[in-house]
Length: 245
Image 1: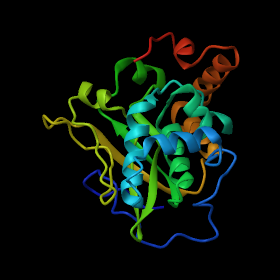
Image 2: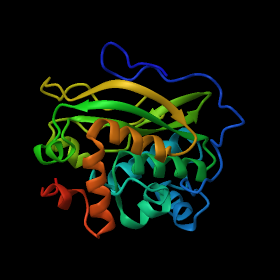
Image 3: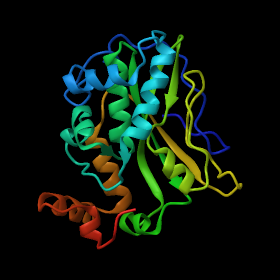
């Protein structure tokens, strides 16, 4: 596993060619890029004049960033919770769900795509969410990587534009050429995102790894309480007696 740079930002993109043994171009049970809803969303998001893979990836990024609402209180413990078509149907997801959707959309338009994961600290996490998690550390934060012009390029669609503005940060842009990772500081120079550890890339959502990491970081009892609340028809907010963001 690679570490984040000393500056607190993600390392340079991996320039190694995609491994043909990995499923960077086909569907999985979670990344259901063949699903009619995923295919339709991709077609709608990309203008007909955009045939270049870079331009198509950029269009998909903005569609997921702003049309799918960031919601950190979504269920997280089953593969179907991250399924691309499910995220489209609900219209919301946290970082991993949105990254998985973007990855599936990339594959839907024949762009080799995979998922990357990292632990990060959000210095501006809202108090209700901090108290729900018991931490400002977000483990297995997810982002997408597209294979464009011979290299992997990172795209982080997690936060909608309005969430950036509320944090005092200009929305994260993606040009298909440079890595789009969350910024270390706000526009006023205050600490914002600190990348702590890079877990590397995956061809699919590693649900078991994510849940195990959440248990280690947030505590078995807390995670079990969240799961029980979801199973009872509630959720993390109800389990923690907090209001949404």
